Image (tube, rainbow, N blue to C red; front, side, top):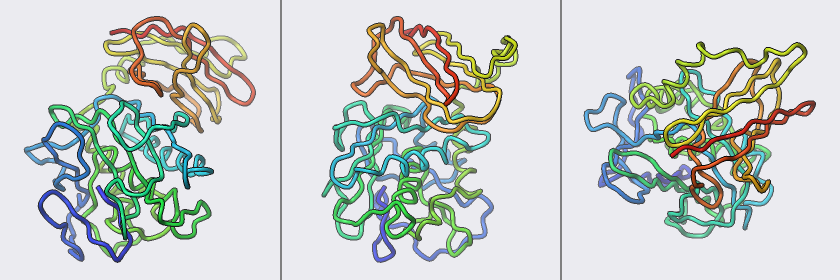
Length: 326
């Protein structure tokens, strides 16, 4: 998927998306359909109920790494805000995070990467391009975003706004195509053309798209349903944070609780104390939460075994042993 300024054209698989088409359809969002296996930057725009299905994740936790080379320096806060927008969607279990930095590029290497570069299929009026790595069944296993380094990028709301474009591209990373809505106010972030810092916020059309993915391809549904059967985490008098973990097929589930909303950092370490991955880095409301870890790290999949998790707020921290299952 390429995101362009107003002067550019948007290219999908074998066809051009209609520009200027006005629709009154209630569900105007479109999903990316691509039945190939491998790495792709294009796909057909299809409705949620398409018989052919669409690209989707099968894991709730989707960590990205930020390459700070070129204009990537100083963009971490904007990228984290963009990721947080998609994490907070009601009715969807997708947990999109910025889990640290990397030196990897726009290539298939098991690491979801956000980077600034010249080329990678994004030149001229192209602002950014997303590549999806697909397995059979249109399952997304990796995704990368390359921002056009020839463009001048900002973080203060002026053109070209990093957070706005990142929010749009992360939508593509989640399997969402460009919306069919045009001329609306406020415009969905998945509008086909860049329209300024207004693209930072999700609108109902954007949220409906992610809810569609969750409903058609449920992730962590069994985990969410079983939460009510577990004992409350904050059982100790005076406790304000708590953390536990349990194994699951293909990974582990970390469960944490907050007595009040707070900025938190939830990280996983190996037995030698080396940081493996950051699962959550940002604000979470009061209550109990779950995060699925599939064993991914900045260097690739981790082997099954024993790991340790630490959750920190400004005032307290909690720890738990994590058993990574095969």
